[in-house]
Length: 237
Image 1 (cartoon, one colour):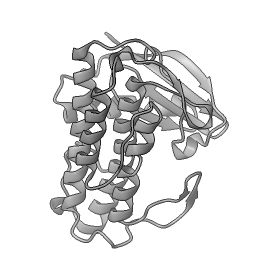
Image 2: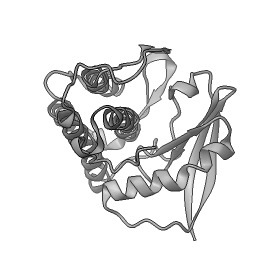
Image 3: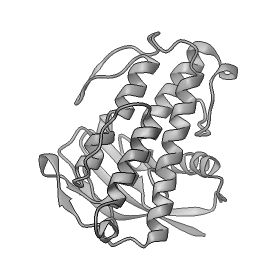
Image 4: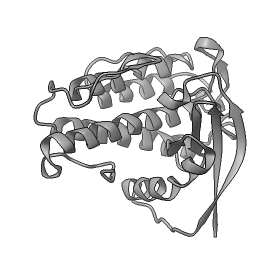
């Protein structure tokens, strides 16, 4: 039986469980048990997306716990996962980069398939970062616009101009011009949060998938499954 290592970031608002060996995979729930019940489905979708084998025969092992002061219920997070502070080989970096770029490419494909990008798809509500994006265009812009924020946390000068894939590619190109970037040093970024290159790659995929899932489900409900691309292999409910 495969052991799936995970990190539980939690508070009274709920549990956000990050899956260590599947970059950007996560589950949420009001309790740890509720979150873990969703893990099989999450890994099945993730493995379909990445075209890697998946077995229902696995056991989750919580290898790290972090009580957070953030709004876990709205997927706010600041945890540095076990192993995200270790140096990278070139092969490891290239693999992480490939997942982050595939994620951006697939988000672009999903967004482009939405027939009307300015039509509200969700009811507005407030979160820690302001009102949630409710149209496809707002969801896309919100997701794309973290590009320079995430890269900036590891001192890479970037931007979020153009489409989500092109600005992410530029960020990696600028990163690769920095000496010793594979050393994966841990830096203190905004709000005292610790960041590393491994974490940036995970956060890109994690953040993409949060908003891609919301966009896909809302767009399918509004326009129908046959019109909406599903490159992330999400299930509808």
